[in-house]
Image 1 (cartoon, helix red, strand yellow):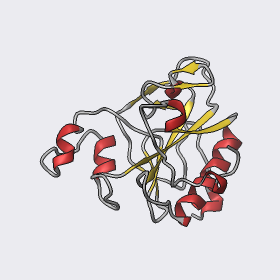
Image 2 (cartoon, rainbow, N blue to C red):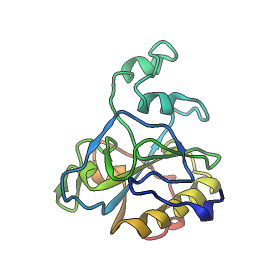
Image 3 (cartoon, rainbow, N blue to C red):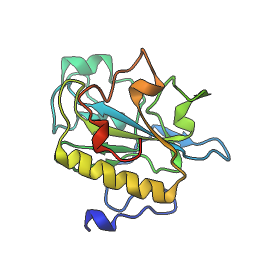
Image 4 (cartoon, one colour):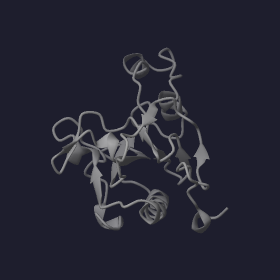
Length: 181
């Protein structure tokens, strides 16, 4: 399947993504409309790419003995809908119609609890490093598919919805390379 052939099913699983179901999800409030996409960055351990840490964290199976950093986060119950690796691989953890636990305490344009009305997209990276061409290509195609399926009205960084608490996707994320902010 090519990137152009991606489709969402009725639950919000994307045909072009590798599926790794996360238990860290629940139902959106009844009648809630998906209107926001939140862009994040993550790498586990911090600054390391290509490993299984993110998948393990979002699946509640992160081994605290595998890396010293994991000892402080292995009990977190977090997830995101999508994760885009540096090479462009797309992994989906939560179907779009469900609420992923990615935003935490958050506010967007006067509305609290951004998880209720947003889709979370994690990019493998850090605040200090540029993202790859492959990541921007996958992100832009993903946004096209999401906008065709849901009434998305805005894109925001985690830093925009959790100001002072979060800094991602960071200053190296080039918003000019992403359509429709």
